[in-house]
Length: 349
Image (tube, rainbow, N blue to C red; front, side, top):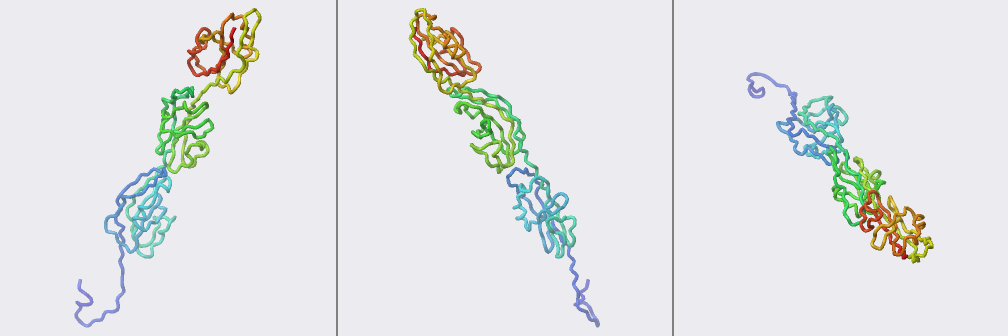
């Protein structure tokens, strides 16, 4: 308790002194967290982490380890820790520590284990950072298939499409042709008016994807050109029918009802004829259906002399399933469904 250099009384002599440094590093306490991030391409930072308590020791660093203690990084400052993008580390769990130590510490190196540090040091408590892989699931869509008659000026919407999906990332509806070429990226399937798309087959998909996806644009192929983390749902077919009866050539015809058979031998059909079903139609001038010859040969086999005097019209009809009104004695003007009637050829008897 007395002072050796001032309180001694008597005859004495002190030698030189030898210093003894007694170090006791103290890393204090980390506050903030724990953190739970989704690895989805969006940067994740530990912005509200901090340090409390007396921090003592000649040297310091922050330490990031995996759960086993393997050192993944040694950010030198708190600001450097806050600048770490944990999304880029992929899925997993890591721990953040603060380290105070004296010269001569051994083992504070990346890929070594913080449990094997040797020297005079103190590690703080740890903060856990859990990095969960994003759920990239396109889900399951239901509804349809849809069949529309396009080109008739009536809007056609794919109503009633539903989605079951637990994805935690970005979502997008995609419309492609039958080969996967992207035709549109609507906010919902109901937003698309398929009447303006023309005839053909297209597919509706639901897409889930992580940030950074490349290739998601019209003209690219949704099944081959996308680059990144993504998943496409099943697809729903949309059939866009546009019957086209083409053009009848030949005639007009003028026959005399005199007992001699009269045939439209040089009648023909030109142009693209499209539609799942077809028939020829013979009507009177008001449109009343007199006959439905199934083929061109059947039309050429009709003996118009036997019909008596009058005027009739020959038409060609292409149509999809569900056509209503294509029956003898009904009127061709009252046909209902998805169909196209060609021009008519007049036969005056």
